[in-house]
Length: 141
Image 1 (cartoon, rainbow, N blue to C red):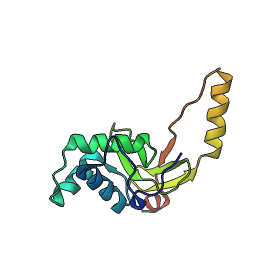
Image 2: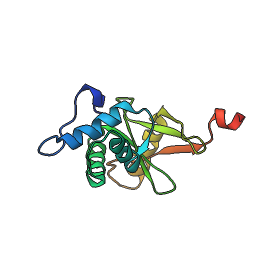
Image 3: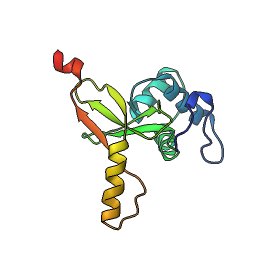
């Protein structure tokens, strides 16, 4: 289940959307690249918004649970977030040199995940599948 773009209205997070949560959502709506919680926090500080780093992490986690943001788990252990561009379930091609990402349809991945789960008598509740490599622009450079 994908959420509408964050700019079309903030999803309900917890009991209420605070000024701090709304500030995090606004930053996500305005950037078009993946960013870490620390990068989003620095952006908020640059805007002279007083939002604690813990609040940024909690807000991002809540948005991820609602499928309102894309989440990338990098090999370095860092987690990156971005407003979902596609309203449908998808995966990403991620350039390990420049960080460029491309949303891709996950049809074959979905079929594979379902088949593996069924073969192992396992009830599938979700999966992560991102493809890491070097984009054409970086390969040509």
